[in-house]
Length: 155
Image 1 (spheres, rainbow, N blue to C red):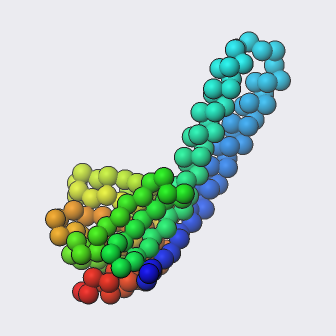
Image 2 (cartoon, one colour):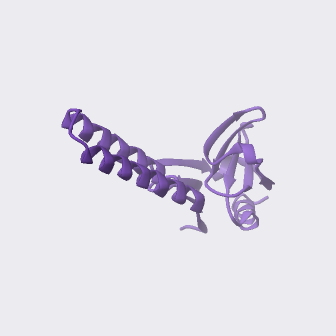
């Protein structure tokens, strides 16, 4: 049973992904309109790599956070990148603001040591595990996520 589920959409990341797609499409059309000077197999390989990169980029345009009976789960896009936190191992949760230079996506910071999952904005909920590890989960409704975590871990 899921007690909390929220998907945040990274609109800026979608716009950037679409802009890159248009740029790649323009480059392919331009290259194909000129006389072939490169092996067509190489062109196909480059196109395939571009499609895979765009697929990977598009998978991080949404961040779904859910809480069930045992886990707090974070999933980017289709689920290529995901992380689960055992609720019994969470020591605390609080609302925080990320600095602009923390960026978006999955980020590892060495000082102060923490891992950040974010697709848009600067609001997040910081969870501290019983082993001392710190994670920040980006959200557009930090108070709801903080309350949901605290209710499930009984703080």
